[in-house]
Each structure stands twice: as C-alpha cells, then as structure tokens.
Image (cartoon, rainbow over all chains, first blue to last red):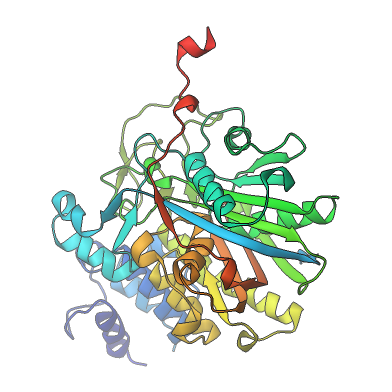
Length: 73
Length: 364
C-alpha cells in the first residue's frame, strides 16, 4: 500500500476530500480528528492492519504521519 | 480461567423502571449548539434518556422496580431469602443502601442483604453472586436489585458523557427450582486499569479536594468531583478484551453464536455494540438495542433491554447470551434461558423516599 493510499484511508474515515491530509500535518489542526474519529481509527487499524491501538498510543500521535507509520502493509 | 457453574436456579421475573424525567439529546442544543448533539447521536446512537429527579436516588429506582415485580409476580416478600443491591450511587456513606431498601420493601430479617459496588458488569456479577448464595443456602428465592444515577455525577458541560448516561433501576427474581439448564458464568477484572473510568473525589482517599476545574487529556474541563472516562482506552478494551472473553466462553462451553437466540450486550454505545456484533458475525435481529431511548444505564442496561423488548410480549423461552463490561475494569459473560413471559414492561417512577432524607431533628 502506498503512502497516498494510506492517507486516503484516513481521509475516507474522517470524511475529508482526497488530498486534504499530508504526512506532516499536526493532528491538532485536523478538526475532524475528534473523540469519535479516534474510535473509528482503532477499528480501522485493527481491521485493515491487524494493529491493536491502545489509548496511550493514540495520545502519543502528533502528526498524520505518526498514524501512517503504523500502517504496516 | 474463572468459570462458575450453577444448577437448578432460574430467572422467575424481571422488572425495570426509569425516572419520570425524559431528556432528549436534541434539547442539549441550547447548551452545545446544533452540531455537537447531532454528531453525538450519529456516533453513539443515543437519542434520549431518563435522568433521575433531583430527590431521586439509585435506591429509589431499585425499590420501585422491586415493588413492580412484587405487584406482578406470585411470590411473597416473606419468601425472599437474600437480596443484593448493585449500585455505585449509595444513599449514604453508611449503612449500605441494601439496608434501606430492605426496610422499604418489608423484607424479613432472615433475608441476607448486601450491596455490591459494580457498574456496567454488575448484572453478570450480581446474577452469579446471587446464584452462588442461593445454591449454598436452604432458601428458595433471591432478589437481585440494581439502581444507578450516574447522570448526577457528570459535569453538565462535559459534552463527552452528559448526553450518554441515563438512570434506571432493575429487580430480578431468582428461584431455586431444581430444574432448568445449568448456567455457566465467566468473570474477569483488571484493576491495573482502575483509572480508565474514575470519580476520584468524595471517597476516603481524598474526601474534600478543591472543586477547581482543570483541562483533562481529552480537552474537556472537569473537577475531581466529575466522572472521568478515558474514552479511547475503554473503547479499545470493549472491542478487544470483551470479544476475547466471549470467545473463551464459547470455547469452554463448546457452543457457537448460532446456539443462542439473543445477544444482550451492555448498552455502552452503538459503535461498540456494532463492533462486537461484527466480530461475532451476528445478525442485527439477534442483538436488541435500547440505548437509543435510554442512554447508557450501566449494569442495568441488560435487564432494561430485555424489559424494553419483551415487556409487552411473551415470545417464549429465549437462550440469552449476556456480556457486561466497564468501570473497574470489570467484565463478565453469562448465558441463561429466560422465559420472556416473566419479563415486565418498563415503567416510569417519580417516587423517592422522603423519610430517607435525614435532617438534624431526626437524630436529636
């Protein structure tokens, strides 16, 4: 999966337009990345990448790239 | 693994009540504007709930449910050999609310009464505790009561949970019949995650801390007197540890989801229930939902879902798979055959125990 495809998965999850996200974007600046979105992210990571995210891991995410780095496919 | 077995004990009646105070999520637009409540409903599935009246306590709701059960079941109060009240919202610091409810219901002194401090796992833990006590006794009937008023512990401006919690009470009558299918229960607890859902103030560790608010990790302002929930950790627990317990239960009992008629999950939020259903490949008709109208009512949400769905109809005996999970963290799984003809409709109550409001004159 390319980096662009991974970003597209996140854009789809956050109901954003394609190209809205970039790797170095701070998650604090993404309004759509709220508490419900974090729950969707847990499901997405488990379903698509078999990665089990904990609350602690989510708290440590600073940029969009931090999430993409865990998408190991 | 901690499996328990019970034989010859059946559920002889289930009654639930909610406070006579209906609150819609939409009504919160006055506080939060239009977007936040709409998004909350879309995400959690909660559209409305019933919140306790200012004077109403958890024990009032539990007592009202028990009165409704006695009024509609052919059991005499003198026959109740034990009563357990599951709540985390007691009337007093001491005695336990079980004593107060015993007096109000007129249960005999030969009825053992105690309180069990558990939340969302309380129905499963309560059922197993009651079945174990009944098995070990010469008594025929046990009364499992539940009451919760978590809505009173939430900061009114906490948009993460003020629209989530509903209040309710439940009464479940257990009867030693000597017949019926054996019941297996799995109970688990992980105290290392005790801070995941916590209300720190007012207990004996910190009886009177300052009331100042501070910004929590989720960006919401709370004081130590408000319920704090680490939403992402609790969610991750709900869709990881809970399905694992269910899998262990199915393996141990050598059963499959198809062997059960109904899956009654703690009504935490729609998203969690959907994930659990997806993991077990359950069809929607096997997973009744009540949180859309009652919110998250803690441990009562399982009996409340039963009363909501089967209170008005007798659909025969259903093999029910039940899973409760939450604060503690604590979780449990149990399956039992329940005669839906013994499930009463949900009723509303505005009653509260006026003699229970202690004023100095009463102690002079």
